[in-house]
Structure formats: C-alpha cells, structure tokens
Image (cartoon, rainbow, N blue to C red; front, side, top):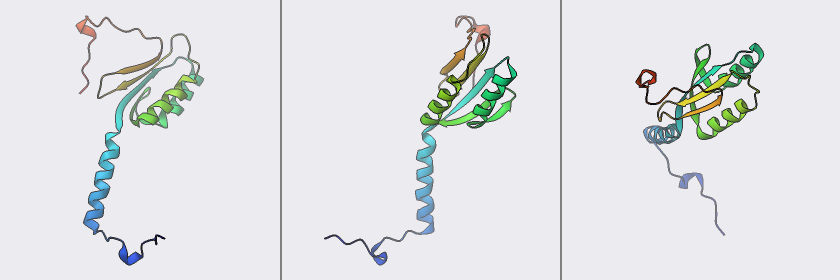
Amino acid sequence: MNKSPRRADLPVLSLRACAALLSQLFSCLMKRTGHYLLIYDIAEDRTRYTIAKIAEGYGIRVQRSALECKLTRGMKERLWRELEGVVLGSGDGIRLYSVASGKMHHLGVSPLADPQDEAHHAVIL
C-alpha cells in the first residue's frame, strides 16, 4: 500500500527556482500563441456592431475596424466560428492576417490584387 508523501518528504523550492520554473512555463505557453490582425469592412450598422463586439473579446482595437489579436489555435478557431455565424452583406468582408506567417483567412468579398503587380505588395515587419 502506497502512502502519500508527508509534508516533510516533499521537495522545497527556493523563490528563485519557482520564478525560473514559472518563467519557463510562461515561455512555453507564449510560443503557442500567434499575432493576428483582424480587419473588417461592414456596411450595415447592426452587423458592424455585432462583429465589433465579437472581435473586442479577442483583441485590442487599433483603428475603428482593425484589431490586433494574440491568439492560441483554439482561440483563433473559436473566433472564426463566431464570425462565420454572422450574416454578411454582399459587399462586406472580414480578414484575419497572421502577422508572422503572412497567411490570410477571409470571409466575404475579396478583391485581391494581381500578385504580379508590385504596386499592390505590402511588407509587414
């Protein structure tokens, strides 16, 4: 029969060791998040308000229709599912850019420029 360890048998960590352990844990968790830019262009006020309320739960507004988000994979998927549930008008659009990878997810109208046209290229640093 195994006995649970007594308090005296448990290892004691110094404050410095605890801080180092927490720092390593925080670093691991931070590596699992990505930086995103959420941009929307919505014509109808009610729909725009709905999108804004959803988006504000995931990021920080940097302009009226743009938010910076720090998301885990699960948060990104949950955000996208919530946004997909909103009925968009014919000219409305929502874009979620991964700042680190340059990948883009999009809902609605997407007038993408010709990739050969250098005038439409942008660099995100």
